[in-house]
Amino acid sequence: MPAVRTQSLDALTQGVLTGEVRSIARAITLVESRDPARLELLERLFPHTGRAFKLGITGAPGAGKSTLTYQLIPRLKARGYRVGVLAVDPTSPFSGGAILGDRIRFDDALEGVYIRSLASRGSIGGLSRGVPPAVRVLEAAGFDLVLIETVGAGQLQVDVRFVADTVVLALVPEAGDIVQAMKAGIIEIADIYVINKADREGATRMRLDLRNALELGGKPKGWNPPIILTEAIHGKGVDELVEFIEEHQQYQQQSGGWEARRLQQVEWELQSLIHDALEQHARATTRQLFSAETLQAVLHGAENPFPTLRAWSLYGSPHAVGGT
Ligand SMILES: Nc1nc2c(ncn2[C@@H]2O[C@H](COP(=O)(O)OP(=O)(O)OP(=O)(O)O)[C@@H](O)[C@H]2O)c(=O)[nH]1
Ligand SMILES: [Mg+2]
Image 1 (cartoon, protein in one colour):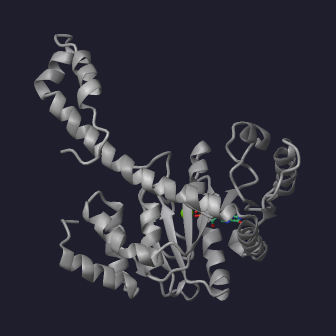
Image 2 (cartoon, helix red, strand yellow):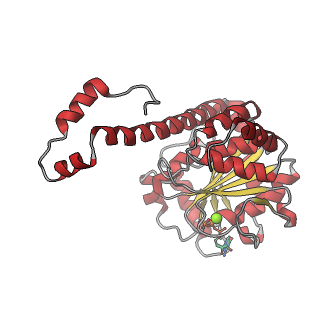
Image 3 (cartoon, rainbow, N blue to C red):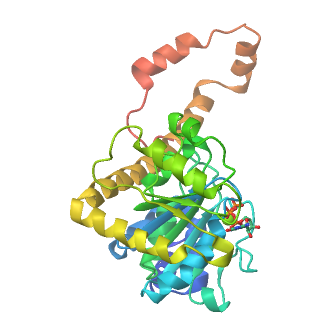
């Protein structure tokens, strides 16, 4: 997107605030980019943000995250939520016959639901930096529940806590050795575990293994993560999932865990924006310090780059963002 002028930023802000779909789409594209105007837009939207409940659904590719999302949507709508969905790097299209795109769907179940996919490009630990600003756009547009679908692979899943208030981890019966996975710290991050595709063999056994593994470290203090069996394609177990999602929300509000988690989220969001800026600064500085010829010379051993680097780290290393 080309640099956006103040005038069009005002129009864009207005469009988002009135829930206009094209504006929401343009705004998300802008905040996902590195265009400096994204910060101006976020500044304008900020007073209207911060209120949505963010529900993260993570799990291996094909675990059934989108199918679960599709099943959750009508149930959440029935509870009065306006639902937006952000899918990070989906490998398969959103189910229910719909393909992901920037439009409000008119499939009955999805009516009024905004669904958008985000690239995990420019990610820290596999989590798209585009998520927090895209959530803000949706909040400003009046969505009060944002479902975030992310493909979790190993410890990358940990990061989903930095964007979601409640994390649901979808596993499948054939996911392999739970105890090994727990030891590797891969699956300890969920607030709610779902063993989806419970129509397949091994689901009950897996729940037992998972329960044992979770209790290995002694009885948990506070929230005891439930393990729910679901058959997302048939909608089985999804009502129970919704109940536990609400229960977790209430638990966090009562225990004060909410505040602590949200503080982490805000910190991560700001850190990732600063990270962006520093990365751009690093590229520019490298080009300043080392010309193409110098790089050649370094490659062939004709020039030692470390005196330059040492001098830079002593005298030139910027602690302030915003150099050229
Ligand atoms: N047998 C069975 N299949 C299911 C169930 N839930 C989902 N599936 C199927 O599993 C496949 C993957 O489902 P998705 O919902 O696209 O999975 P996903 O986790 O969103 O996948 P990615 O976004 O690509 O990572 C689809 O073919 C679904 O129909 C279930 O409960 N039982
Ligand atoms: Mg999916």
